Image 1 (cartoon, one colour):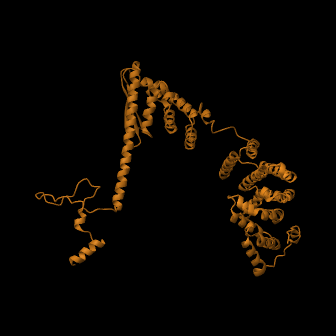
Image 2 (cartoon, helix red, strand yellow):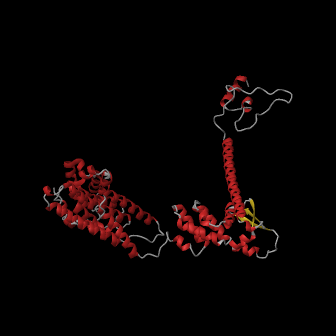
Image 3 (spheres, helix red, strand yellow):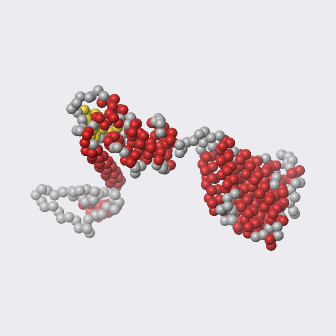
Length: 507
């Protein structure tokens, strides 16, 4: 090939350029030498002529990663060696302070699973007095002036074994453990239990009983103590996470007190925070299949009846009170507060799949609905959010009730929802207009075709007059239209006429 063709192929990457293959790589420690021994080395390339490799190869990236991993392991090994050296120095210091011990007479070697060995010069008397394991193994070797060699092999953590031996020489173990973390103390406890170092076991348990745990540490503590099968102080350590078996009545009593306290709270900010907290905790309980704790249906419905009675009372006060004698802001806040409380309980009922009975209960609140229609919208619109809440849950399939209950719900409260929708949408950013409209549409479409017709024709007139202040349920209207006039499935007789007569929507 011509030199011009070869040069073009080199640029396109088909073949390598010999000059480029001899370039210096930063990962290497020496430059390649291609000259003969008698010749002088070529001058180093200048910065302008030295090729630059901006894109490392996969092999180079893997090499660098392995190098970093090796450096990390080496640094970890060095830190461990420094800590072990510190413990050995501390051991010599304890031996020096206790001059009555005399020269060491036991050579104790600890060997890890991967072969790391650490040897210590210790005293048989100390080991035998502090550890029943060493007392049993050294009892047959009582010759005076004879040094013994003891080796403990296949240790999980050599550093922890060395530190445990140091603890045997320490007079104040509790003080010695101050500042340690829970994980380290659990490891010391495990070794102390293995060699039957009773003072070490007691000190570690006292530490665990007194120090605070994180959630991760709590799991480790429970796991370790259950595996070690220790006795004595263990129940005291676990008292913060265990209690006597609770009965359902006792749990209900506690929950009734907590929920009732939230409903009656005087500080609105604290009430909102506690509502969020309790809802989250109850939701977590429902996700745990192994958790027998749960709130009873009777407790929740008892609170519902309390909220309903309070709402009736507040609305009655609003009707019978002269506006000039009562602060409108206070009156509106009281009604909104009680409605918000009921919404919260209904949310819990839906989450716990216990809301079926509430649909009928809410549909039966004709007295409340009548009072609702007699006070200004600005006072009452919060109540209509409960109806929207139920329609959303029914539309999603989270509430399963008979058709009669669904129709009765709309018969009692749909007019109020229409009237309050504009205020709901403007007053609360948390109200999702589309979510409410979709839920209402789905609920209407679960009724009989004749019931759909009555409701949707009434909506049609309202929407033309109210516009955005009325829920836009055109989707439900379209589905009903196709069902009624295009597909016309007439094989099933509709026996819902008697129900339609109870729905007195204005024309």
